[in-house]
Length: 439
Image (cartoon, rainbow, N blue to C red):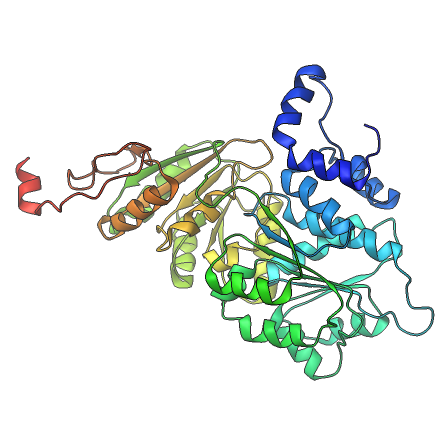
């Protein structure tokens, strides 16, 4: 496809749906837009081609032109949308176009803040992959491990720093990190930063950044606190929203089984043993619960491991590496730990515990059904979790189909709610338990 200038690319991205339909009708075998169209430097395009990527995702096609044009950006996008490449590729392009330091140690010119160690590591891997044909250097720093190797990398000089807030602020106080040369600042997963209590450190770090910089903020959701932060650090930003939070992917087949809490482990073991599952991610509400589920699955011969915040960094990386390489078929995780998991080919997501926040359900099932593949999302619901199920159905605007089998029980009449137009359940008066049994 021919090269386009910035204005043309912007018009294409804003009218992508209509143009894509016309393009597919005229040229059914040719991609609508390629990375080459976006104007990225040739070394970056070689790296992208080497990974087998040809067509940018919606957030990539919309965000990259604006980042290349040095605009601040506010992106609301969920996991699995290609968000990392949307900021990594144009950031590397801009650093390549700039003038590196002529003498002395390289100053840090781009900073990416990430809430978890796993996500920071995966962002670092993406930067390393995309910059393989350039002279740019990057380093990843996070807590939970010794700092010696990290400080050695910093002292050798880097262009891009990917960090978690706590370890970064610690190394800044020790004098190992100086942010006075930052040109591009990326705040990724801002809502998770808020959930994990990192906002005080984030604000202290932002206060040390040069006022003249480009700032990119990405968040899966936009609570009031994040909106306020965005308004304080972004200058006339371009706003991009991909996959609104109330939409769940049509490629994911969702269902719910009503299972008493004391029978959930038995149900999960039987389900995993009898279904054709290539790679499964199981969510629990607590760290102790993740360990217990993984331990009991191992007892019945299912290859499983747990990942959560109380695990050492070495144990977490080993569990994630085994899961990626298919040495472990089932990974049991808490929500915070799973936010950094970016693994292709997850065929099943199983909610052993339903989340208390309905939006978390969206993030969970978004781990499957990626890149055009179909996925399955199963939820196990006990009596105490039925209110969480109702909240999920109200948020998504649709009923989660009920299934039976594997020891699941039929739902009580009090749970089946009437539906109003639009598919959102209506509130119904509570039915007394003795009356339900009499029905």
